[in-house]
Image 1 (cartoon, rainbow, N blue to C red):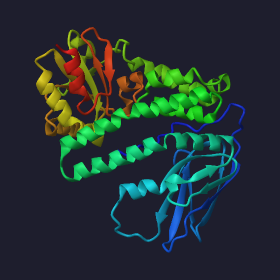
Image 2 (cartoon, rainbow, N blue to C red):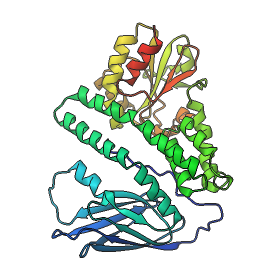
Image 3 (cartoon, rainbow, N blue to C red):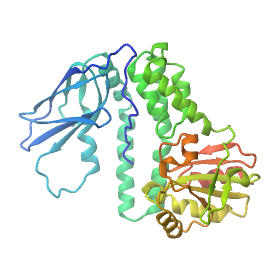
Image 4 (cartoon, rainbow, N blue to C red):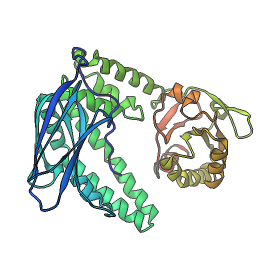
Length: 374
């Protein structure tokens, strides 16, 4: 449930050189009798540094080649066998932009309430974080309730909480869109557009934001890369015709997407090693059992590299619909053609081959099928 902040590239204008530039991050936290350290990670997690908190103060120095997103986390020293606490973890973590020069982080309570100051891009992102703070708190509460139901083994209740969480993502998008509209020349706007496109290559969300960016950002190296991602994402947008493809089934027989013409088809990309994919199995089995006699099929596309593991998962999860795989993992041809960067991923195709929905999870699949299949 915790909202992962995924960064596909660091942000910069085309005029910024690749040379390393220095930054200094100074922090002020409440003084505590416990011993703490802070960990700052940046450059998509490939760079990081740690510092001890002494009398409520800490300093971290580093170098960057361009402004980018980072995560600062406070952790207690010597806490062996301590039980994970979601709320405590989220209270002691904050996302921020780092840029050259001096950055200050200060709080009288928890790190997630910290005031961050620095360059214009640092301050712009801090302003955005303040606007979405109520959503971040709500998200944290959803996570807490979700964990509770999971521990109580109340899976249906947990699913409903997850659906509420998923539904609130539109509120994040509204805030992202509003920020870009008001700040078309900000590096933060380019980052938020990247975030909207996300791992799912959501061109429907990303393109309206991208066209609002300043020409300088659109034509920057990162802007051009983002434009290409959006172009690829358009291949699986609602309303376009799904690209046909063929793969061998468990017996080696080639099966094509077009062979299902005349039916509603959920093209489900998954793998035996994908935990979230396997968690969706009961939802798929339930939907298939309910609608398989009503002009509905599932076309499973595995990204496994081991046929034995693929077939075992098919059997274990009771998949009775058509399954295909090239057993090539991410090198699978259709994955490259569709531009898929993360699984689970699915598209729902109508009887004429047009995409009518994407990434239906939980009870959303049955809800959509009930809506369109009469």
